[in-house]
Length: 195
Image 1 (cartoon, helix red, strand yellow):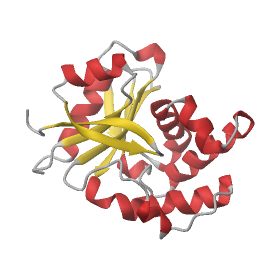
Image 2 (cartoon, helix red, strand yellow):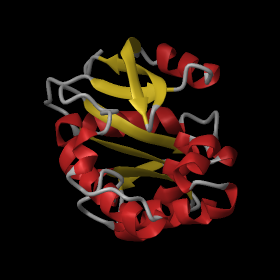
Image 3 (cartoon, helix red, strand yellow):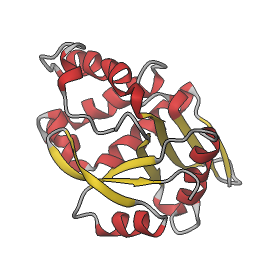
């Protein structure tokens, strides 16, 4: 398994990384209905290709199998950059989903990332590559990318997602509070960078 930096042509795969990470229910909420779900895929693909977005290929690492398949992906960035990076989301949501929101208004949304952490926004491993250590390798890649930072790693997980929660606890993450992602309460977890 090789871990490499994301590229612009990874955008469709990175859209899948994001939609799988946030789950179908939240995707339907973003879209407004099941029928509009393809618009959410389009939204995140455009954001993944946009170098100014929180979901950008520039913030991504891709796990590539020995046969060259994309096995998984992770998107992570400095939480202090969230407001600047989120402006692209507001712009694209207005254009693609028809949301009535300005880029400036996005700054008043609940913050999923804390400014004092390296935020793991999305993590996904394709089903055929699960239980092979891909997620651990992607996490190690993030740690290497941000080597030298004093900030802990942070992420959100739904309280009902017991499997993911147990995985993060196993990796050394601990709950530090509750944060909201599109009005949905999530467990906010952190792990000291070098522990």
